[in-house]
Length: 402
Image 1 (cartoon, helix red, strand yellow):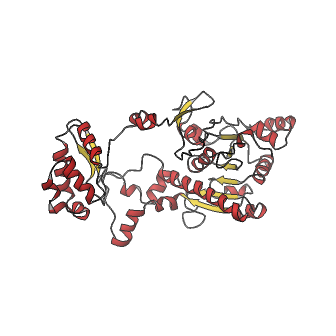
Image 2 (tube, rainbow, N blue to C red):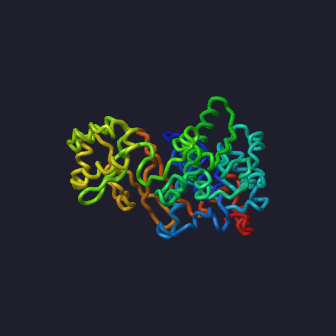
Image 3 (cartoon, rainbow, N blue to C red):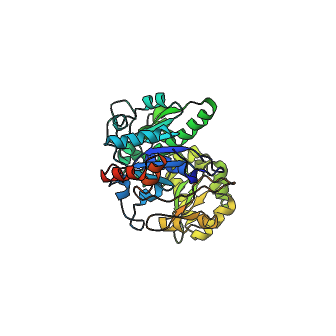
C-alpha cells in the first residue's frame, strides 16, 4: 500500500505510523484521534450507509454530531461491508500493511471477522493489536453491553458522584474517556517497545478496569477503613475547606490542600489571626472533622467581599481558587483565547472551531485534520491498495463499499 502525502511530516511524532480503526462511539475513536493528532495515518473503517453510529447522536455542529466531530478529525473514512467476503478481504489487506489495529467491536465480533488478536500477532508479529471492551475478555460480565453510564455504575463512580441526596453520573463519558486514554498510551508504549525489540503486541483495555483504576482514593478508603466516602457535591471527602463559598454578588471555589494554605487564607485573605489559631482547624484532619463549623466560619468572611475582591485577594495570597464556569464561559475563557488555543477544522459542511490537542510540542504544531464524510477516502484508499477504477466501481455497485 502506498503512503499518503499527509504521512510525510517528519516533525510529527507518529509520522509514518499507519493505524486501522474498527471503532464506534467514544472510547476507541478518542484513542485514535489522539494518534492522528500526533501525525499517524488513521484509517477509520465504517459501515456502508450508516457509518459510525456516533454520526447520528445529534446534529449540534452545523448538522453534524458533536461527538463525531470531536472524536474523528484527521482520519480517513473507508466505508465497507465487512459481512461480504470481498469487504473482509479488503480489511485484511489493510491490516497486513498496518502498524496498529484498534477495535472496540462487540464481544466476539473481531474474531468473526477473522481478526483474532493472537492469530493476527502470529501472522503479523510487528502489529500492535489493541482491543477495547466493556468488562474484559473473561469473567462473568464479559459479554454484557457496556455503555458509559452502565460502567460508571458498576465501577462505583456514580455512588460517590452527586449530592448527599442524589447519585449522578459524570457530565462527560468518563469510563469511555478513561479506556480511550489507556488505549492511546498502550499504543505509544507498544510502538516504543517495538522500536527496541521488533515485536508488536496484543493489548486488552476494559472500560471497567480503567474506571476502577480511577477510583483510587475512594477505593483505598474502602479497602483499609471499610467505609464508602460520602457524596460531597462540590466539596471533598478528605480535604477542607474545599467548596464554593458565597460573596456579595456570587461565589468562589476555594481549595485548601495543606496547613500552609490554611494559614495564607486566614492571615493574608481574611486578616484573621484568631481563626488561624483556632484549635478546631489546626490541621487538615481536624478541619475535616469540624467541616460544618469550618464552612460557616469561612463563608462568614467570604460573604463580606465581592467576587472580584475575593478572587484578587486569593490570587495575591497564592491560595487555590476558581470560578464555576458554564460552558459559555469556557468557550470565551481568556486562558484559551490569549494562548491561541482555537483553530478551524474542515468538515463536509464547512469549517468548525476546535481546540488544539492538549499535548503541546514546542517544535511543531500538531495537525488538526479534516473531519471525514462517510466513505470520503474510499476511492483513494482502494486505489492505494492496487484496485483499478473498474474494480472499485464494481464493489460500489454491489454496495460492498461506499
